Image (cartoon, rainbow, N blue to C red; front, side, top):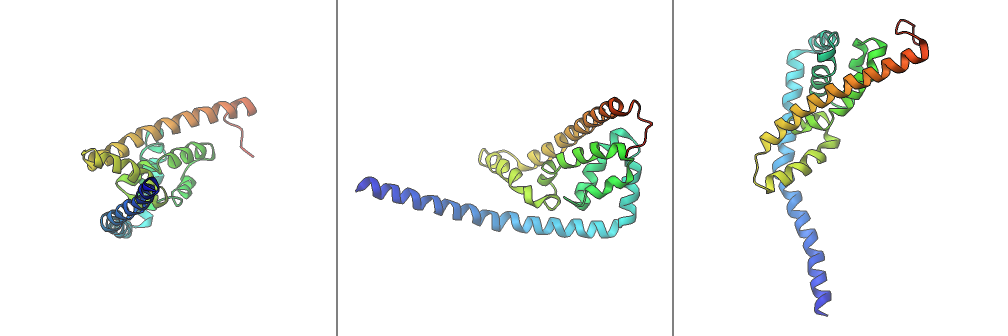
Length: 180
């Protein structure tokens, strides 16, 4: 009987721990997310859609910025999935690499800009919980995640573009041929 009572207490304890965990998130993280969403909305309105689109157009002309800064800024300002229409500023043969870079940046951006991809915030918060419990600084984690993400999306964009170009040349003989 004692074994069953202990099992019942531990089972009940799981829900108590879950409730405490939820309380921490409701008190600490939800207000932070609301403030960040409000801040980015105000910033977006102050800068204006036209200026943001001009910046995206300029960034799309250089391969280094096309696969690093362009997806990062688009994700910060527009979020997921509204980042993907910014590919309209790119030639057709560069859109695949942009999509790969943008999709790959959905997680790293959430540490500093949770509004950009709130559906995936649990990934960062799961890592952050372990880092916090271990006694480390969450700001360092968020910045590291953000900066390493930029490096990763640049590499992914570059590699995806090289693969695309190789496949296109193999199929059509040159990059000059129009895509159907």
